[in-house]
Amino acid sequence: MDFHEKERYGIEDFLQIVKILRSPEGCPWDREQDHHSIRNGFLEETYEAVEAIDTEDPVLLQEELGDVLLQVVFHAQLEEEQGRFTFSDVVDGVAKKMVVRHPHVFGTVHAETSAEVLQNWDAIKKRTKAQKTQTDVLRGVSRALPALTRSEKLQKKAAKVGFDWPDAEGALEKVEEELAELRGAMEHGSERDLWEELGDLLFSVVNAARFLQVEPEQALEQACDKFIARFARMEALAKQESLSLSEASAEEWDKLWESAKKSDGALRKDDGN
Image (tube, rainbow, N blue to C red; front, side, top):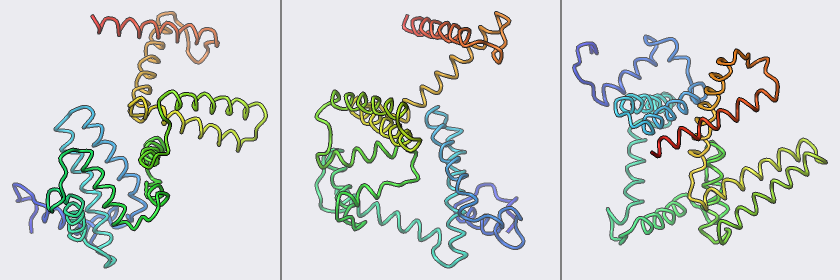
């Protein structure tokens, strides 16, 4: 088959292209790869697709979804070569899962609200994954998730069986308690204590975010963007004053940062007008 002659490709064409790339007559780089060598690429492509969603860029999203699909097909091809499963098995498995987990659509179960759907979904998931205890449910949350996301999912699952603060105030008091314990570890604790207490503080902050209905991963991402914007304004101010950032004193850094913050506040005020 001459793939250059195709005006439009389908999924079968794509599967064949990846198979050829992995063949002895294919690409040396593709032949050398395994699940572990392309693992990080899978994560990167997924995050790039998420960025396209966040920026509401449909052209970029189409491209990035293609890159994610390549990762899926490539991993499936690796498994097919080992005789364990194929891409068709992947499709069959996820299709069956969707039918089983949507009994209100494909069966006789009744569900009118999203809350009822999620309740059914959790019950079916627990049964199909042989999760007999709530601890099994917690252990089922992937360790490969970003820690902020994983901690939020763990807290939500624990809250479903009643292990939760009564309100946001309790969650915020826990943040203050963990901060105090971190300060204590800084004064008298070991390096291990510092790691433990800092982890507890971050976990409690995520809990507070959940009560405040703020997505912690997105909130931190916004904070990162804000930091870059403020640093850029700081750098511009330093240039105006002929000040080298690498040679600036702590007092000069503080002055630049406060000026950048004031500029940031003025920009927000202008946006509000």
